[in-house]
Structures are given as structure tokens and as C-alpha cells.
Image 1: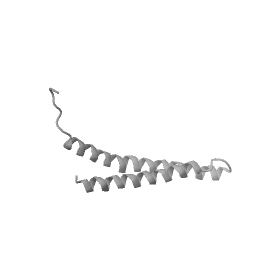
Image 2: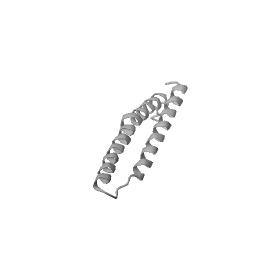
Image 3: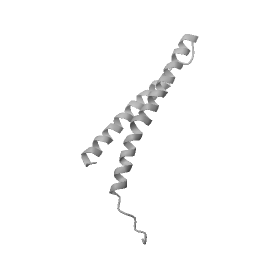
Length: 83
């Protein structure tokens, strides 16, 4: 992966973190008091948000971190066994 490719992936990670932060803010703003309908709707949205956060983390961020791990693995100098 080129330096430009790494920077592009870092920018993607930053954007994903911003998306996740927006979802966490929304999660904290959910109303969990009131009528059954309001609470039910909030609980459903709560579950949707958690699923979206999980998808961002596991489906989008983890693969990028794996790419970085491979880059580091291939670029790291070989360990000196006598060293």
C-alpha cells in the first residue's frame, strides 16, 4: 500500500469515527420515558443504532485495521534473533 493509500484509509477511518460519534450522540438523546409507544419506538431505534455502530466497527473499521497490520508486517524489519 502506498503512502497515499494509507492516508486515504486513515481519512476513511476518521470519517467512520465521526459517523459512530454521531450515532452515539443520538443514542444518548433517546427518550426512554413516556408512553409505551414512545418507549417502544426509542427502544427500536436504540437497537438500530447499536447495529449500525457494530457494522461500522466490525464491517468497515476492522478491515482497515487488518490492512494496516499487513502493511506493518510487510514493512517491519526482520527481527534480529541474536539481538
